Image (cartoon, rainbow, N blue to C red; front, side, top):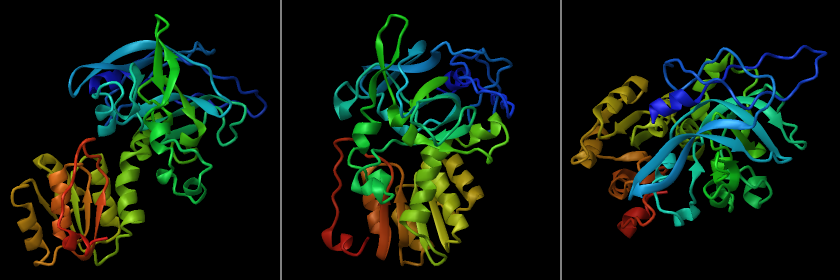
Length: 364
């Protein structure tokens, strides 16, 4: 996966036009190369064609060859028509989320999934073209990409876009015929409004956030890519959902991008204790470097460990980023009376959770 992404992205910031110069739509095809970045997959090229060619290199997910095994291939695709409320973005970098793997490893029909498709939903890049109704960004502007939402429902109008009733329809089911192969085969795109596993992609305007004035170059813009999902989810859980304070004792289970972002947010919030758990010891060590005060990779005695680290009281905030039902149950047990148990990781589609009702009554 990493090598495919390194080969895929190859965009530098387009040169800014002079004040009196008309802005022309930039190219849709780039000469792809790569450099080894410190923390994400960022490409680098030396030239860009002057006119759009409507083609892109993309990681295309096809029907899994066996259960639970994704089937990804690098292919050259042609972009479909640009809508009035859409933008063409030259992708600089994309993170990889567990959701990208899960939704390309299941059979056609589950969760509305169709193949072939282009995944990716942590993209960043530069605006190359925009539809006639788009006014929030300009050509050449650096942007990061996030989820899509309807913008008209009650939840969206009150700023709760992740509670939009169309969230699954818009982000998982995506859009057919967004791309086409060299054999004119339709390819599903607009995954989370973006399908960022493509060197150039058509993005829903709702999914675009401008970072003009915040980044200095393409390398820095590439580091912003995970903000669209992983960093936003982890930090947002701590700051906006849990509303963590200095007296809080926080348990974070799963130390991927989301969990580590939660660790950093808890550190910034000044939480009294931050307990980090992951079965991979190197992740635990990284969490300790980023602000966790306690860490363990032993799930067998995790509840006992938590009780010891909290003097028998339990935690006031438990966050699960794994989606593992056993850990979700453990998080409930680890919560002190009045504690908050927050689920961020996505469990398997058929997963069920059983818990003691009276214990649950003491948890938010």
